[in-house]
Length: 526
Image 1 (cartoon, rainbow, N blue to C red):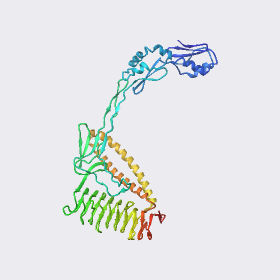
Image 2: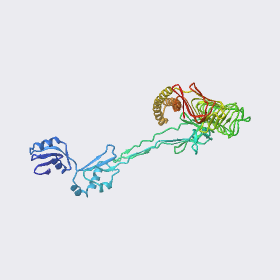
Image 3: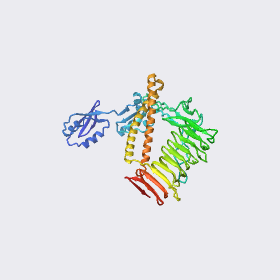
Image 4: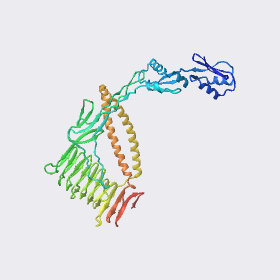
């Protein structure tokens, strides 16, 4: 069969094989290419043989390739798409256009393609020399992951008020909930929707990843609805909190009124809120946060102590040299008058500290705050609007200071350790998820392994939280100027005694600015 013929050359075909006959020398490759283009079905596979024939004409048949089918149908390996390619000229397309759709549909049927056939494309949009999609499968719709929502905890940080000032003492430390109050929810993962290939074969969806609600069963009610939605409710009145990544409700003692003779001293394993005040000589001690909300504050109390948390005294302390407030974390109070306050992290006083003994890692008073008389001791930083007063009341300010190089070295060590621990934790979390996704199929041995891994996971969470606290502490220390700082926003008055890293200065004239230790010297900057 002659495919193309002129004075220079000819293309012939025998079954699917294509041959080249070169009659005249001097045919360029560009000319040869144009002749090949005139035969849309030609698939040139022997380019070297064709080149040799053009360079040394013999007028004999040379095998150079194959004939493609007029209509090539291809199916993707996943059977989701079928294409056609028309190896014909525009003139041939016009000639067969009327019968082409029915022919294509029969070809699809012969190949087992029954789904997603694009009739509009087959009837109206077929073109030559283009790979055209003529059938599309329906992909599977993968399932949604489970969605877990827990109680939204309040902000435990000082609040910036509308006038731009920071309220350091009016905090809500305790997130209180009542029995049967909602504290968490899980919308279960979905299975997804099955898809189908162009050949009618099912495409399995990926189920959404399941996650487990983590809660303390002793203080939290777990309810599963008919739809599979899970909800958590407080089993008791108390303070909601996260313990080792599990939501729980801790005991929360609310004293509606004052701590006095009718209540006696309070020592409680949990959170304590006093809506009124604590009368003179009475004490309140608790494991976690203590909040004394009365506007009158407290007076000559015996002891207010949080063994593991913080203390907020919204009305201030008028201690009459008797009151002692102690917290493992922070203390927030409106003012302190003749009181002793000790905090493991920070002390925040909103207005003034008068004739008080303050001790913490850092002591912070706002721009209008005043430290007058008494002693303020901090590990790395004290900040106040003013220190002392114009009547030259003796006031002692001490900052223990730190070694910046050591602090930076420890910070980098803890950060590297945290990164390593997080990698181990994430690996353990993935392993736990495998167990949890198959929890109903676990035998006794596997369940024992799962429970051991849960204990290990909880321990790692505690260790990581400790690392984060250490990192936060060191980052806070390193924000301090020099190696210990006393920052005075307004004025420091005479008869104020400053000591930073054993370097001392007695203030003789009213001045302002920051004092800090660096290179074994006490520096002052305004």
